[in-house]
Amino acid sequence: MSDDLIVLPDWLAAMSEWVRDQPEVVDLVDDRVYTVMPRQKVFPLVVVTQVTDPAATTFAHWAVRALFQFDVWGGPQSATWTIAETIRALLSQRFAGNAWDLTAGAVVAGKVTVGGIRRTTENAVASLTEADGEVNRAAPLASFDAAVVMHPGQSSGS
Amino acid sequence: MTQFVPAANFNEIVTAAATPELIEVAEDITTDAARIAPVDEGYYRRSFRVFDDDRGVGAETTDYAGHIIEWGSKYNRPHGTLRTAAAANGDFEPK
Image 1 (cartoon, one colour):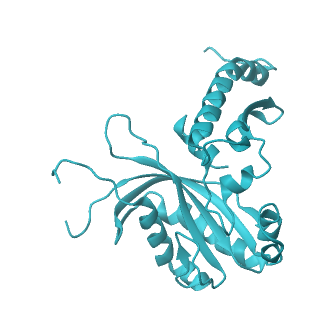
Image 2 (cartoon, rainbow over the protein chains, first blue to last red):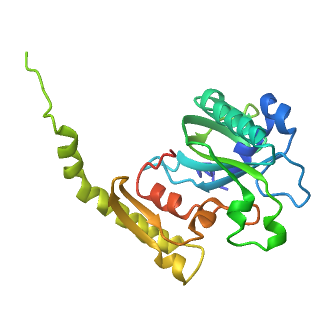
Image 3 (tube, helix red, strand yellow):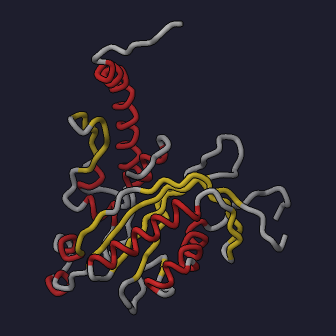
């Protein structure tokens, strides 16, 4: 690979790792922060999805405005709210404006904009598409999305 | 010293002036949403439309399962069709 080729880090891997590492999140869900819903589920759990990451820079392949969705599954409803709000607060107050040297790559987080938390139960959502047996397994859900301006950082090992 | 005193209906004037271009952006969002929709055909792909009402100007889907496709469920990953299209047409920020 050419030395001057900039390949951006896996933002989703970096984001999920960072959230998983935060002590406040560990207190609430241990290490159950995933990028896909696990087959064996222990609730509550968090699923992080990267929706998109359009370029934030016009001429250089350097910074993106990544959009993530955070889904907190489990219960009771108050727990899903607390977990979602804790992650939202961490993104705004700790992740933003700092450099992070992660296993998934070194990243620098700029401005973070978080959305409102949507609270629902899975039975209401699933009733449109799932079989009755699935609908009966209601799971409280709290979701929000966050836009983060990010660019590659410098690893402490480099 | 010159002092700028906005007209009493300043907000209405600005909104009216901006609406045509906002509608153009919203149309681009619906076009992109249809292009990246996770189905090649069917109602969802044709369900995107521009609205201009008391919510302001925006783009939406009229598909009854549109929110599941957008936000996902326990069994479906979120596709984020409209948010991806919105991000491709400006600095989309969550609300």
